[in-house]
Length: 208
Ligand code: AP5
Ligand code: MG
Image 1 (cartoon, rainbow, N blue to C red):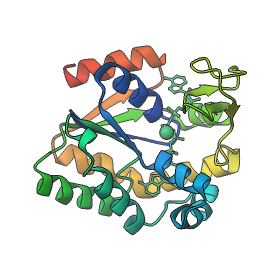
Image 2 (cartoon, helix red, strand yellow):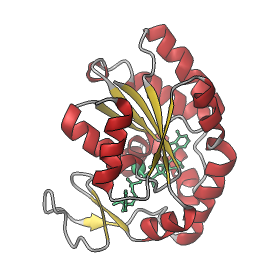
Image 3 (cartoon, rainbow, N blue to C red):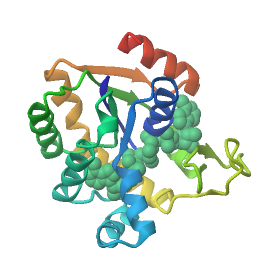
Image 4 (cartoon, rainbow, N blue to C red):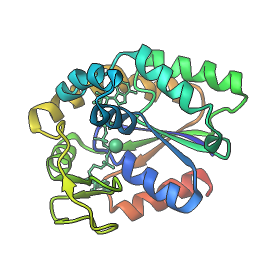
């Protein structure tokens, strides 16, 4: 399946991507992960992206569209992919549609995970991620339950930055809900339930 996961910061896009990948082996295309890896490696892209990410603003469309177009040429995406955190603007969605049409690999669905913003602020303030395997957990995880690695807090998970990310989501990304609804491929899921129940709902909605 070729999927887009939509949803505000902290809605659970990464968590649901991990569950889908574990069971179905789709390629995971998270623009946030790609950009964080570039920041960590200190590349030119990373230096450019860091200032936007630290403030909770969007990295320019021209940068992320190129990254995703490149990633979609890799062979592991041929058996299905999950776009997590992309597209985030109408311009990105239009560029993605053009690219997928060229490749002859249309989207099967855009899954929007819906969660109240105050729930999100609490979730993101306590999120911790594994430095080694990327496992997404929370402050209760002293070490990574999957690989034993060190858990750390993302630089953009500070309350003022979280609130700016939510405002940016409202302004730039929320219009994609209508975009994919008009395209006839939108599925909306209540994300304020136990992650495993959300996952069952996602699978049921996708007929998996
Ligand atoms: P990105 O990394 O994509 O961050 P985001 O969209 O802000 O989303 P998050 O990763 O914070 O949340 P998530 O929905 O994945 O939730 P998670 O599963 O971790 O982007 C970061 C930055 O990069 C952007 O701000 C921007 O600067 C830049 N960027 C990235 N893509 C871009 C693009 N396309 N264009 C321009 N700029 C771009 O869950 C969160 C927490 O909740 C965890 O602790 C988790 O354990 C917990 N949780 C998950 N599900 C549940 C549940 N059902 N119940 C209770 N807790 C739950
Ligand atoms: Mg994420």
